[in-house]
Image (cartoon, rainbow, N blue to C red; front, side):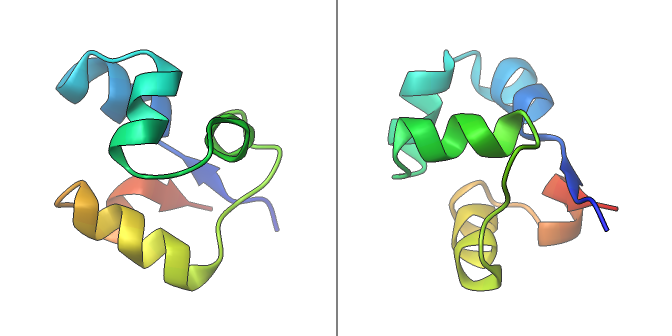
Length: 65
């Protein structure tokens, strides 16, 4: 099952940051973040929860099937 995300939309609409600045904001390595944004990889459940908390969102608001 492929997990999709709204990371790019959140980054551009709510934070107006480039991918490197956004990765830094959520304290994730840029290459890792970029692979998430492009749907190549996904975070562990623990990391997804941490990122959602930093963005003040629910995990379901960011990642979906």
